[in-house]
Length: 438
Image (cartoon, rainbow, N blue to C red; front, side, top):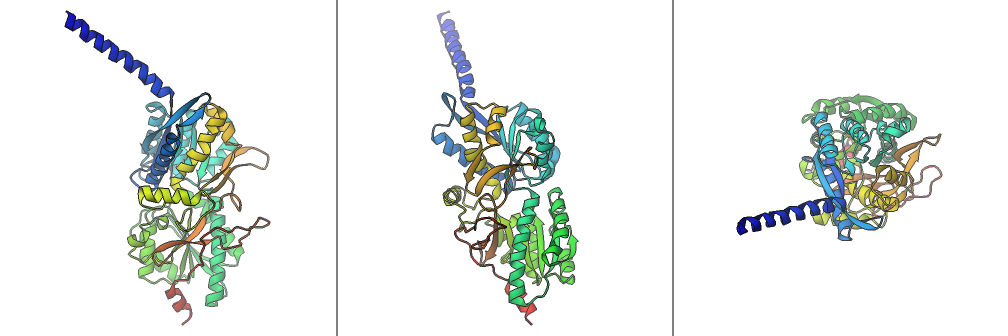
């Protein structure tokens, strides 16, 4: 009987300890869901950036919330959004109902993020998007603030500003082609993957490229996962294009660059090729990706400000590669969420978002300031331009990804000059030079 009584006492003590410790653990932790295509580099960037944020914040004791410190606990959610939007919405639903997260960061493909956004809004959770570029994600905030006010864009700036940045880079490269090759008018082929985010960019490009004094010679739309694009490349060459404006976020960027190099297509590539942002791009294209230029966020050699180099160096030391822009989950947590929570003194979504939407803060890739419509409605979108976020033009040169834009002393309208440390001159592929100087 004594043994039984002793055993029951031990069980009772264990039960009491467990029931006491579980609420205490939950009460002192801020749960942040990190959602993305975790089997792809974009999702790995989401997770790695968030892990860096968690380690940095928790090493300092956590986030000061009122009179106590709360540590961060990350919850990984594989959206599988490249393959299936339903998988993405299910993953977000699990974060809300099973994991009961307090905040969410991540998301990549616009089609999936729009659907995931609705679920996060249903549960009134702040969701900082770190990958999708479609403008609708933020125009929803202005149209129906009470419902969509919990969504913020963390990276990149919306596709309208992406294409504006690409146009400026195209004009810069176009001027170099005219000067060096003696071309009177640059002919441009638009090659964009079949994806929702690319649609507004194509429309804008078709309308604006002629205003730049260039000629659009055609639009081609390969599959986002195409492995053979020789038909599109042959067509662009027949069109007489001297520049190819690429709009790629998926794996098609590798075969396109490789096959263009193999065929020695006499046209430079400028635009967006997310695959070309990766350290392994040169090897993946067997070296044929040399001279490809892409819009990018991080190059090891370029510094936006004093935060850039420490972030890149730490990321490279931990993960062995340069961070892609989806790794700005780090900035969303460290410079966005954490200070907003501290200032609000709570993890209540409504109070945190009211602080976040009026914040202006520096990150490793620029300065975040959330925009409003002309009539003063919140958009929760990123401010683009000198002094805020501009991104980079980055070109593969001799196996290294180098920043080539903004060129030194670049100005936009009446803005102050932009001078990022580490920018180098753009290089025309030698076969393009040979073709036009025959």
